[in-house]
Image 1 (spheres, rainbow, N blue to C red):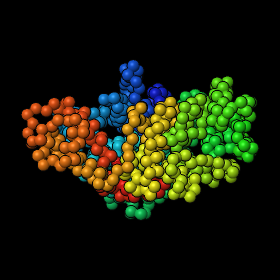
Image 2 (cartoon, one colour):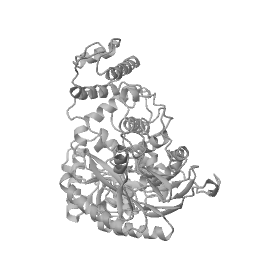
Image 3 (tube, rainbow, N blue to C red):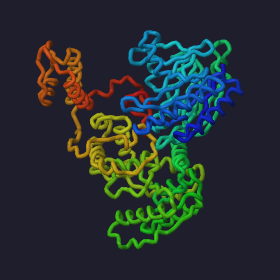
Length: 620
């Protein structure tokens, strides 16, 4: 059997145009012998649902589009759609064949409820379908794959229609470009099934998808692979008879090495390009001041849009050497440039000068009907953002990239063509954190320390005490996270940024005005918290009655939260709905006190090398 993956980049909501392209790709696939065509998750509707007032109209048009596909597609196809359930995006996959469009996920739930389908449990039935006498199972998330592996689900083919946008901290999101660094080969081996993975490609809103669809044999060998960040029609032959397959290690494709920095650069280029193309925007304007970040932004914009669509404003407020660097990068990239005409001498400090230049940049953007860009990075937004943050910019291409990663990107870009002057590499700053630097020799080490603390807290969701337990300068860890909390209000009004991680800052929210700060906790205190959490679990198993042998930790916790529970295994009446919110609050409070080393996960790659602890979740 031949299976095709149509890796296409489409405008969100262009149902008519996308249907035309789906029919074209499916026709080409059939000409190559394909019996099933898989479309990526974002192809037809993008990754996110529309708001409530527009939902009814979109659903009516979507139904018409699916009806047309069902009538016209030349072979069975998997067509993902997106909706909303309980306030969250709900990704469904439609099996389109024989003039019908069948929702596989909802169909599996319905069949399981009637006792007619084999599911993992009452909440997670397995979406399946049969084709040419072979059983196909559908997975969309890492949890879906975990469930199939844990239950040894017997399928001939597992189709993984990935829900994940590209994230630098998740090698699995790069799909076929990072097979040696991700989980998929072990999944194919554990499932003893063909693994067909379809990856979306292109920029959709602020998210970027890398494509790199692939097909793995049950022996974990790479049978077919699509390129990263490009459209492609991948057709692979799936042989169910083991004797017909190539010998392991022979006759298969070589699995490429994952270049983390190169993949990030490609993602930013595609994300920036599609942001402009899919919204019909003409060009970009930016400031060149000789800093490494401004030079790198100019290079990124040029790679994404071409030099004729990028206009640079030269900052005359910086020292002469930096002005020379700014001029050199503008000439090297063949950009249109202009010297800022404002009299910056009226500004009393550098911050006001920067504000004036950005105000003039916004003026230029209006005149030229272009998009103003700024070079602010994730480290800046996390620790240095103030009321003067670059609000005149519409987009921050580096807003989800740490400064340490920007330095690696600059070196990478210069290996492609050496256009960033050497002087620019010295022109960057480490965030000013009280107490930081006394045990660190260079500003590069300071920056890496700060970024590791931030990434471990934001992407890896580790508590202060957990981070400090693995760092020499524990007080500096606390200072970094306190400053991160202090910039919450400034981040709330920051411009848009291209998402490049599993947790962009616009998704990380704390209550504004909160005065509570986490603090460093002793190992004894953390162990007491762990015991209290165990007691709380026992409490819930006993129907919210406090066990008679409860340790003092849980009793004191209940008193501190002013919760009155009887110290006996029997409670005559408990308002469970009223307690639900309270118990959730307790669990959140106890989460930081739990022992994070008992996950059982192997060491994984962190932001700047191997971490000494495993990921708290499955690769995302």
